[in-house]
Length: 500
Image 1 (cartoon, rainbow, N blue to C red):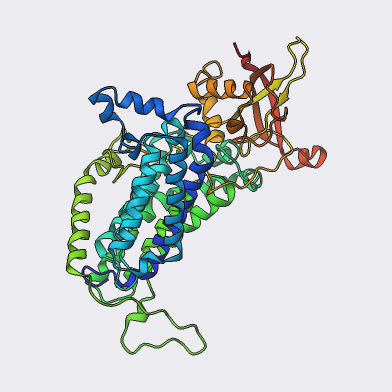
Image 2: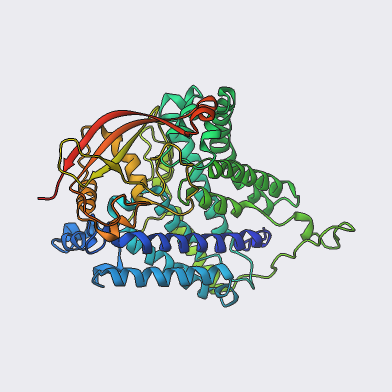
């Protein structure tokens, strides 16, 4: 580092800008495909109704976060226009075109992504109530101040990214230590691979690993989330110490965070949470220190080390980034206090703009997997044949290999996992009732959210919800039955339901 210019972190900026932009493109694509059916004009939880409620009183208006749809009347067509523009801007940033201009050009692009996606999240209700939504928003805001390719990245913004990774990782670690006993007795990952919201292709193999390995996973998780994040700030010593070791420490800390996230990526589907953490962890990856020593040369036969971007920041841009840093210093009081609190909040925002948030995940781990299977029938007879609806991501068919979905986000499938956590006799969420009603109407947009309609567009006479206990089959059971899951029927928990 060189004062206000993080000259050693130009490669980190490239990864941050392009990676965050790619995640925004995926997020807008997810909303293009799913928002109208879930929250559109005729969706399960219509966003226009929420906007009408927000306009009913000043107090209600204050409760709704900023969204362009307050002044720009919501329609499904306008939502898709916003998503299309978001994807175009995101892909442009991935290619690096805006970064070739002055720093205000990529800044405007990232702020447009931030405000556009916030407009969607603000009216997304329970379907957008995930921690990685606010993580993407905060990352997009910070990325707006990384600058252009013809100048070094600002030191203050680089440090703010380290602070974001620290809150993300250390917050998750503290949530676990303060949460369920399974994290303290090292048994959490004995269950997690099997009971996580949406298993992936390798989740069963991970679950079948020896118990000692799962205990080692938990220990490694605690080390990566409670110890390693502190070392992300060590490169700051490079401002005063002419030595490569502060940068090496930061590189190693980033590598550990990235390695743990890659393990989570190959063993589960957590939308873009793990992918975003990998991208953000690159903020601590520096160019090799030797590349900056005058007169140094690469070893014969090796690849040349890329040159850092030298020079100083324009005064106006330096002022802008310092103001952002001072603003973040003020906003960071609340998440810092939350980290030290015994009543630590998980995935909480302390301001309307969702900046300087508190993060965390899986403070407790469920010990058994309960799946809600939705069935329908074309007959009104008492001995009617019931057929299952197949979802795109969540477990259903016991023979199907769980798909790799992330970093794409299947919102309906995720909420189906949350559904039974409140108790099997309390499946009264408004969105689920609306979902069953949409199936009874054979609503085409709703049917596109699932993998297979067993009735090929014909409205069923009745639908119902049946609870099953799922577990991964052992290797011996799989050799006999070729079933990846074994399930036990617990009973009908909703229905049979018919249209009035």
